[in-house]
Amino acid sequence: MAQDAQTSVDPNAKLVIRNIGLMLSGALERPILDADTIVAVGGRITAVGHAKDVDQAGATTVVDAKGSPIAPGLIDSHVHPVAGDWTPRQSQMNWIDSTLNGGVTTMISAGEVHMPGRPKDIVGLKAMAIFAERAFTNFRPGGMKIMAGAPVIEPGMVESDFKELADAGVKLLGEVGLGGVKDGPTARTMVAWARKYGIQSTIHTGGPSIPGSGLIDSAVVLEADTDVVGHINGGHTALPDREIRCICEGCGRGLEIVHNGNERSALYTLRIAREMDQLARVILGTDGPAGSGVQPLGILRMIAMLSSIGDLPAELAFCLGTGNTARMRELDCGLIEVGRAADFVLLDRAQHSAGRDLLECVQLGDLPGIGMVIIDGLPRIGRSRNTPPADKVPEVVAA
Image 1 (cartoon, one colour):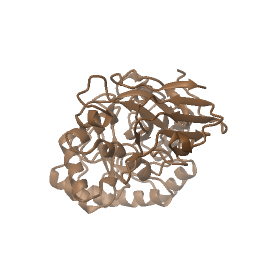
Image 2 (image 1 turned 45 degrees about the vertical axis):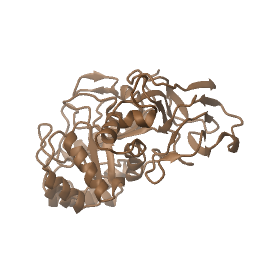
Image 3 (image 1 turned 60 degrees about the vertical axis):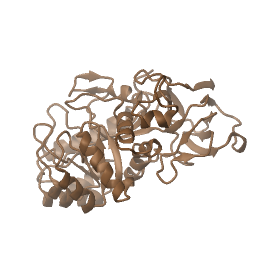
């Protein structure tokens, strides 16, 4: 597979996926769809239903799911890309392609903070953000969609800096707190400027993670009022339970749970969100690459953990890593519905799992097997090199 996969989509290309055994929508309000066929044209979903009711004529690519379940491509809400498909944090190549083999089709930068010699002056940080946005728009390993260019705010920035960033295409802020701005009032002012110009924000939550970061407690999180409470379960060190509850109850922002955090605090956050009937606020990330390594199966592992130990039905757990994130981050993927990007992962019960099907496999804590990943209506990988083998494996039968 080419490292820099084709990014343009033929507007006339027609994909048909048939014989789907179970369709997970990514939407909490209706997590399972009564359908067995998906049609996409030009990389976008045009029909979801039963084979007899949808137009399959003229397909340029036909995938026989062979009874395999399908879900929206997974979304990692918290990554730290740097230079292409290499991470200096672990000196590892091809980590993005490996993550694609974990079913992730979109990843969102929380700051390119591991760049050696990362500039912290205002001109430099803006230049690096614009460069990263451009570079990862053009470079898509295996077809992966990478939302990058997330500057870490520093003291001295003014409103015009945020307008300049937005005008250049920057849509994200890196984790507030990883730079020199660590106090609530300054953060709140800059976050408001960013929001004014359509730039989403997230904040480091918990104890320090890398040199230069520091403790960000509930008071700072609530005052900063970022769009997403980044790794509320710590990255790596979590806040005390009382402060996690204070954040959950004190704001209506996104609650991001990450793989590289405190698992007990992750389960505690999930419980509070369910008690508040606000599960839609919970999204998933890995917070990698980081000191703990690269986690190609991190989102799948979070789904399995929250389902099995958190007693969350598997079909709802998948929504946390797909539709919840898509809606919160205003993405055009993450849900199986007409008009959305045709990004899918076909997966099934792992061979020899005690679970009898995909959902029971996940609810028992086992990772499912991935048989195919599709991005923009194009099959990108077949059987994953990283997951256990799936019971049912789809096949491209015409192209």
